[in-house]
Length: 295
Image (cartoon, rainbow, N blue to C red):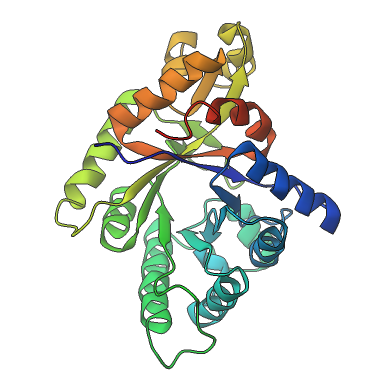
């Protein structure tokens, strides 16, 4: 049987206290299962934002999507995770990644390093968090026995790390444009996504229990004219035709019921049962969620 759907909304726009709580309540009203906050300079700070979200809502889980491990010292991060989990009533899900925006490290005065160095730091962070948060002597204490860990990445080393440590395997289905220091992304083709998911599943074959698979959706548009909706993207993605772009699982465009059919097909083909949308698409995808709640 396929894993049941979960849906997350990644809130990326800073707001006043009242406005923040209002949009968290709106996410809950729309049926989102997880309220998420990224870890980018210029966007809301993850942990206080999630505590505020917990105060405004009752049902959704709360997650970082994802923390840039290069910004964090593992011991200090363990304190933040445990405190936030306690203050949110055990609703925290911790997302980790290597970071992909070199310019943010420049601004913060932090080393960027090679891809291998960033993956090594993420591995050390995941292992140290597991050790610290799993110790009966660690203070403060998290409320959950284990805070669920999501790791996001596409490369072979990242997939291996995800298979070894993560409860949730997150796929962006995109890669950083070579040489970009601002984190410009280009989407993988459906064949490349097939290959990356298959590679992960091979690496995860010996897990005692399968991980949940997450996909970050890049565009949602409820429309009777899908071609017109993706035209702005096509001009920036010359290697893809309109048909190829509309086929991508990270592009959900069309009438509501057609989008629902595609969401089901994406779960069937790739195993993605946990879909995350960005804040600008929260309302549009909310109309889609209504028909998928119990599946």
